[in-house]
Image (cartoon, rainbow, N blue to C red):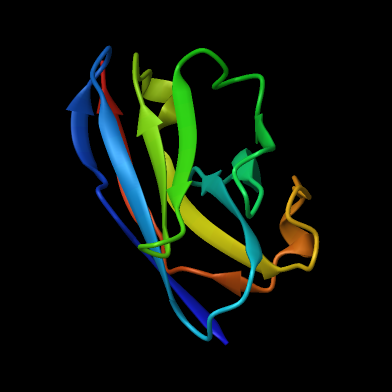
Amino acid sequence: QVQPVESGGGLVQAGGSLKLSCVASGRAFSYVMAWFRQAPGKERDFVAAISWNSGNKYLADSVKGRFTISRDNTKNTMYLQMSSLKPEDTAVYYCAAKPTVHPMVVFTTAKEYNYWGQGTQVTVSS
């Protein structure tokens, strides 16, 4: 079992920055991790994913050039650095994890992930 726990959300003005963290506590095994987000009344959308060895990263087109995903396996922690934030980035951001034996694999669909955090709210004011 892996229990992801997000932190770092908050209220920021458009153009500002935030850094989200996700600590994945529990049994130690290799896993791919990702960020998704869900705005009110909308579906949960993919934001970014990172492979176990950090050798493969994938970001949604809507955040490319603004967001950066990274991880520190010594701390069981994944990060999402968000810059040049826009009001349309407002959502609850969820951390997800999936065990894998492949160090380079990433997944971009929510159904692939086994473990989810409770989410952290990010609000960008105009």
